[in-house]
Image (tube, rainbow, N blue to C red; front, side, top):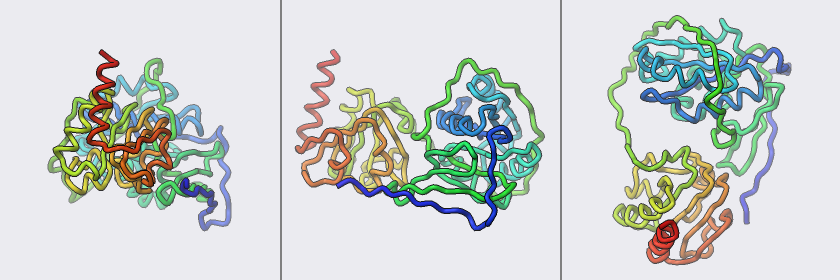
Length: 346
């Protein structure tokens, strides 16, 4: 039986609804970047902003080297008329305590009505603090929005219900994060946005950047991969996880993911976790190996175009959302499948 999906409607406590027409909407997108490369997730946020305001702008924040390194790329994003830049060493690692004072001052000055970002770690870190600083509500993880600029749609209860939020905060900036799998990525190439530098705002903060540990892989990035092979607790060990999944992922040219149970058991790094508390993915092909299908995991992958499940339990919930299912021993089936795919490609 498929999970129940229902629609709920809520309005904020203010009695006066604020109707914002497209012509006076002013949308801005936080453009994330790392090591001189634009985060593709931000392109989905651009698409969301363009649905509201066809003449949206973007903002790039970071150290001078960070901003200079990514500027030429972001200027070419189609649909952005202007790129604002804020360069300062304090912004190098996008620490919310340092970035928020800048945004809290800048947004009202430019009469921004809607500020968008991807629902990533960066967006989830900065935007709640910014909403508090601006004394406005944050609208998180939207999957759709109406052109009036006040009605947004977002999933709740691990995606088993859909909530329509009607914001009635008059004259307040809408702070919005976007579920990237629900919006196409804006194209990069023929854009020619103008650039305007803004003055950094110094902030007194006790928070300091210490270090970061990055998981480096030759495989496609899990968040944006067109094919994903994920493993669950049924793989029994880290050795089996790699031994069984890696050949199939290599044969398909796919990224590797994992259920929370596999991550908690130590079979896989937490950067590979797919689900409500992990990454939300929507690839062309999602192969679930030894994953039972808890609702928390389904919330992170059920929008995939083609879902293939391999599990020896015929009653596993994963089969309820799978387009194709195979009831079999994964330790026998997956290596054989990887072999057949490799032979077909040879």
